[in-house]
Amino acid sequence: MIPNRTTDQRRKSLDKAATVRKERAIIRKDLKIGLMTFEQMLKLADAGCQAAASMRVKQAIGSMPGYGFAKTQQLMRDLHIADGKRVKGLGVRQRAALLEVFGC
Image (cartoon, rainbow, N blue to C red; front, top):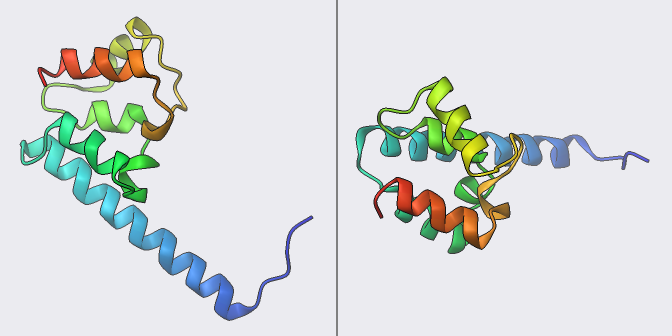
């Protein structure tokens, strides 16, 4: 059952979601231009940053320099990472394999 929310509660939820999307876009941009490494992004997620933790792994890999759609899909298949997997849901072996691939 969907909870009944007031207009103010809905507005606050929408503002929070917009903020997280903006933070996620900044993280992806920083990954793309090399200001942030993949390891730093994982540490950010571990530290409690909701934007980094809730980012899909596919988006994070695709944000790395030199990784487009096809290369991202191939890497995810090779490492047995599901399409919908989020950064906070990565297993220990998957994290280690990604760090190895990105030279961290």
